[in-house]
Structure formats: C-alpha cells, structure tokens
Figure 1 (cartoon, rainbow, N blue to C red):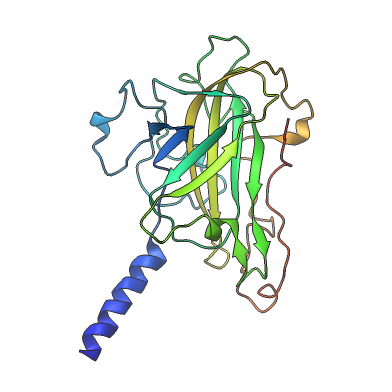
Figure 2 (cartoon, rainbow, N blue to C red):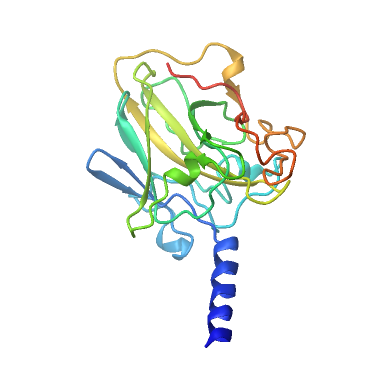
Length: 255
C-alpha cells in the first residue's frame, strides 16, 4: 500500500510540475465568448463566426523571448469575430485551471486602425504596437514563498479562475487586439510565457491613446534575457528572501 501511495504521489507531482494551461473563454457582464481549444480539432473552430480568439495549438509555454509566438502564441490564426465592449467595462479572462504560482501577469492592448470600421483580422501581431493596461506581480511576502497575483487568482474548488481587467474608460473607440500574458518563473532561469490574444471592438466617448513612446512595445522585442526580472531564480539564496519584484516591460497606461 505504501509503495502504491508513493507511486501515486510521484505521478501526481510530475503532472503538477509540468501542467500548463491557457485562456479558455472571456466574459463581458453576463455574456460569455468562447475561446480557442487546443484539444478540439482546428477545423471545428477556425473561421467559425463565434470565434473571437487567435488560435493556440498547445498548452505548452513559449520559452524564448525572440519567438514570434510571444505576441499571441502559435499559430495565432486570426478569428473572424470580436468581443464588443464599452470602454470602462470589465473584460474577464477565464481559465479552467491554473497551477503555476510564481511570476507576473499582464494585459495589453494594440489598436488595429483609426477608422470605426477597421478590423484586426488582417493585422500582423508581430508588427502591432502594444501598450500595457494592467499588471499584477508579487502582492506580499518574499519571491519564493510570498503571494503572487498568479497564485491568488487560482481557485481550488472546481470553479474557473477569473481574471477581470477594466478597459480604460477614456480609450478611443475602435478595433483592438487584447493580449493576456502569464509569465511563470517557477523554474530557475527558464521563464515560461503563456500569451493569448482576442479581438475587441471598443465603444465609448473617449479619445485617448498613449502619446508617449515609452508605453509601447512589440512582441518579440519587449523582453530580454538580460532582464533580471526574467532571467531569475526566485529560490536561490540570493533571491528567495527578496520582497520586491519589478514587472518587465513598459509602464501601465491607465488612460
């Protein structure tokens, strides 16, 4: 019995240590928008009129800061539809499970054009200029044992993990790519990136976009492995008791 229990725990630990995930759905108010499912045949999803998310073929992470998939994952086939949302409303990202506990989470937007009828369907996500509208990192405690937002948004009761973020109230109406990214740092000096993107049509009376270039970044290009917030071992003697963490990338634009 003891040997069977040890074997079960070993298998469970292996699954948890390698378990990944991704952004499954979105909600605006009471309306749900279905995302891409890498476990469902692509031909049942690509081009469907309900699809709002760029495709991602695997729950495995992006490992390189120079990978083109760092923008919107791979292969990032554009959807035909979009999520309608008013500036000032919350967009909630839905994860059916998330197991990694350490690292920052960020939300980005990129405008696809200036005209009201512009679309993101033909946009090259590697050429878009993204600006960060939200970030969450180390909330309290130490790098190794503290409470990260990535850990705090997890649910262990069978309900989905929800990540609500407000679209800036002053944002100019138009077509946008919204990019959610989880950066996991639980393996020493081997960051894991989990980006997913969807298309938005934002309405409202605002007319604001970032005017300072310091807010903008392209993917790849936004990150470097020389950044000590990315190439990091949070469990090392030098870092495990540190109580502050700088989230990589440009500052947040709040409108």
